Amino acid sequence: DGGITQSPKYLFRKEGQNVTLSCEQNLNHDAMYWYRQDPGQGLRLIYYSQIVNDFQKGDIAEGYSVSREKKESFPLTVTSAQKNPTAFYLCASTHDRSSGNTIYFGEGSWLTVV
Amino acid sequence: GENVEQHPSTLSVQEGDSAVIKCTYSDSASNYFPWYKQELGKRPQLIIDIRSNVGEKKDQRIAVTLNKTAKHFSLHITETQPEDSAVYFCAARYNNNDMRFGAGTRLTVKP
Image 1: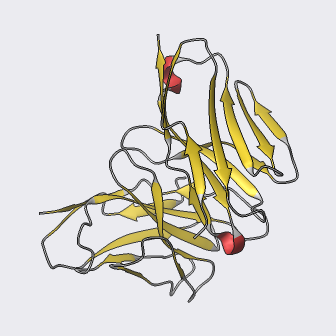
Image 2 (image 1 turned 180 degrees about the vertical axis):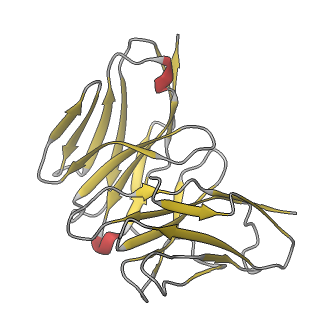
Image 3 (image 1 turned 60 degrees about the vertical axis):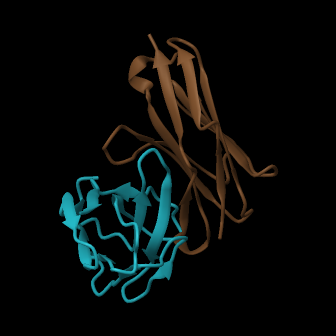
């Protein structure tokens, strides 16, 4: 798990502001994910990417955007269109589609709207 | 989208008893089923996983069973200890590396 770095760990966003959460991995993993977790709730998939320059929407993509310009990086932007962004955000990665390898998580980022 | 259902949402057991958590999935093509343990404010940690070509896997006090026909899999924890208290998530991998999680089970082990 130490190979996935999320930053910042804590972030405060003002109303109407876009913010970007960083996720970097040095595990040479192909697939990367962003999940949202609300207090006492499960993990909901926002976006995932299998390879560079490719990504797919998850269940709750509205109000979020991502990019995958480099294999090791998968930043998530929380836009002003996301009306209730306060949550714990988890980035994850895994090796490739064929092996079914373990999905590893970063330490998470806490986003709060002020 | 694809769906993973997890039950129960909360589970309380006495120390030393067994705990069982069950999940069902919707896509028969799913081929990988991990279980994660999450402590408060921390990231989920993998505790055991099973692939679709195996019916059961065991690691000390933890075991997972898979019924492909019924599309469900279960986590079994024996001889539970207070440090087993946490939230447990099941997950299923769908096509193209789409990984979906259950809603979680909060397990409390009473000393």
